[in-house]
Length: 251
Ligand code: SAH
Image 1 (spheres, rainbow, N blue to C red):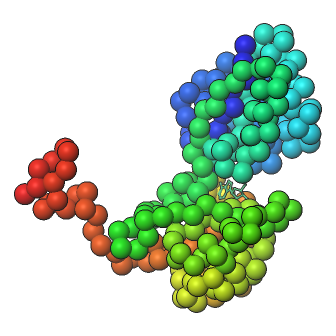
Image 2: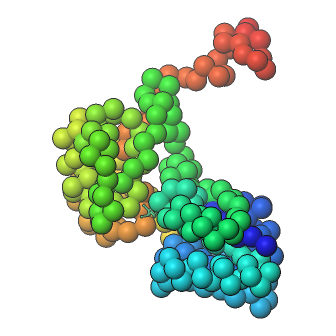
């Protein structure tokens, strides 16, 4: 028996994958990230499943629960918010399972930066605007390598999706401006994307700090920065009539 790491998606219980949903329904043991996973997903669990909230557990305790479950031949799901590969602290769990020769699989999920684009109804990669999305965070208790400081990433003027940083909004915007974003660069903040109480606020790198302080948004929010939030861009080549490709001839 092995462990299935499952991306729960951003909040809306219908945004878990079909495979993730099936595994959750079959699991004997579920360990979920209680701080952000929507508890509504736990209603998919079968009767009698043992459910653990990892918010109050250490890494060793999580691994111990997995190890015992596997030894008993029980199906185990480790449920992570969004996609586990993004700020999921999944690597240390996989490495610990490797050491113990316990096998596992990873089922991806819809990351919150993607649910945020859906909420905003915007495309991050607009032709002539930006073809690059930078996923990053402001330094907190977890350090960020020197070359990845927000100010140096900002110099690219790409679309940026900034996780885990809304409580430090003034510092974030200062670094972005120091790094080269103009003061009028649009910013959107989506709190709890895809949840029933989702909130969207908009401003610019120079105004958003005050706006979200007034809106009292200080957690579980994505900061999106970039001209992709404006509406000026070139049409895509993919659907241009004079541009043929593998599946369609040029007109
Ligand atoms: N693995 C997760 C991210 C975990 S880090 C993912 O792929 O989405 C937690 C951070 O993710 C939060 O601080 C916030 O910045 C962001 N986040 C998670 N869920 C969110 C949601 N529904 N809406 C907006 N941001 C969210």
